[in-house]
Each structure stands twice: as structure tokens, then as C-alpha cells.
Length: 162
Image (tube, rainbow, N blue to C red):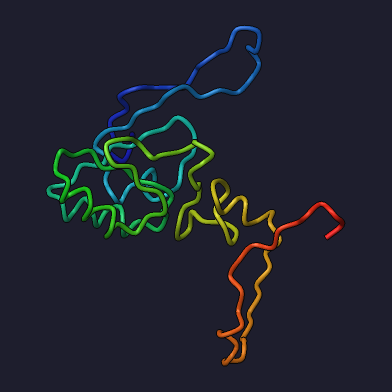
């Protein structure tokens, strides 16, 4: 706020019945945040949203791409060309089109790029399975000249111990 951002929704002072001694932060919204503010330069997790205003599409794309963090970003538009261009060009790990960042649905990956990333793989989706999967790679080469005698039928069992 001292840097010029406008606090629209203040989540401080939230108490939860039965847990009055806990430390909670309710939804918090800052507007008129600029790229030189610490609230923009630092990656904040929790129910905190900063609204950064861009003069045009290219500036908005650059704001997201040039940020040292690359966790997620969303674009809201009725222009399919703009959505495809944004998704292809933005330098961020998770992109939502007409939805906020598409997580925490476990079937989607969750993991940012740049200073937002950690580990070799994302935490959910196919990469999560890859982390816990032991893969096997088989590389083989077969000599030529055996096509004439090759059999392309599934062997059948006769029930007689075959």
C-alpha cells in the first residue's frame, strides 16, 4: 500500500470459529500494482491477488513472460487468435484460457517455470505418475531376410497344456 497499490479487499483479521488462536488470512486483493513493487516481484502464495494493468496486449504478454517467476497465468478473451497466441508465446508453466490457472485438478500438471519451478517433474498429472514409475526402454535390431517365414497370427491355446 505504501508503494501505491490499492488494497481492495483486506483479508487480515480473519478468525475461524473454534480456532480463534490460529493464524489465518482471508481473500486479499490489491489493485494498481506495478512491476516495480515488491508485491509483484515476490511470489506470494495464499488468497492474495494483485491486479497489474497493461496498456495493451504486448505489454501484458511481456509482464507475464518477463517476471522472474513462472507459476501460472490466465487470459480472458473472446478472441481465439489472441488466446492461442498468448498460450504459445507466454513464458509461464501453467496457462488458463477463460479460466483462472487450471489447477488444483490432479489430472493436470502443477508446476511453474523459472524461479517457480522445483524438481525435475511437475507434481500432478502424467509427470506425477512418471516420478513413481519405473520405465523400461528396449532397443532392438532384427536382421533382414526373414519376412518370408514370418507369422503374424496370435498363437492359440488348445487347452492341452500348450
